[in-house]
Image 1 (cartoon, rainbow, N blue to C red):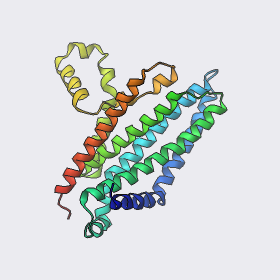
Image 2: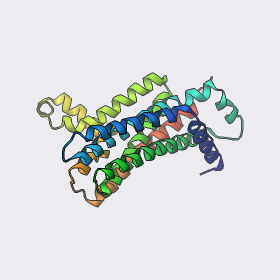
Image 3: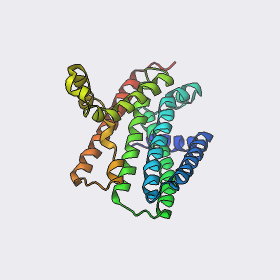
Image 4: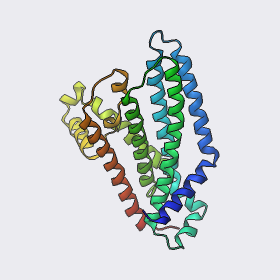
Length: 256
């Protein structure tokens, strides 16, 4: 990794870390987790399970929300602030600029998730919960899910405006979580058109349901070790694909 990429990543991280956007998201996340604690108090006998269930869901939504916002606005903000032009007139390649920005934003998303996850663990252990390695794996895949949303929204923002980028990415995110459920329906078995579309989606577009471990954590289900390897490879592959597509598109984009 070149020094230019690292410098841009560091600067991007510093800019967002010092902005009020991240603080507002973290503040909202803390309030939601505290609300989770209150709700869990009304769940007799399974308070720790309810806390973990709702908490992990809220952390996932927080990661997706911040990734959508940051990814869709990345290039737009740089163009509006004219900082992109000041960077590219120097000996900095476009791919270095884009990679640096993505790494910086990925670090911000990670910081957000770790902060919320730490608070969730405090609540979970205070209610009598016990550690399970599946909890750690769940956080890892929540982060990979957020990272994938980040690079997807960045990619779509390169040939559309931020609103459309958010809408398309969010649609794919929701669809990616629902395709496996659709396969269990009677309509999927009977409708050839629907079955063809769902099968096409699962093969050629990101299947976010592959990264969802929440039910396995809550119900102590067993997963073989090779599953984690395959799922990790799957998520890294899609992140890599969208980064490559974004770099190719960014290199051809007219910056006006």
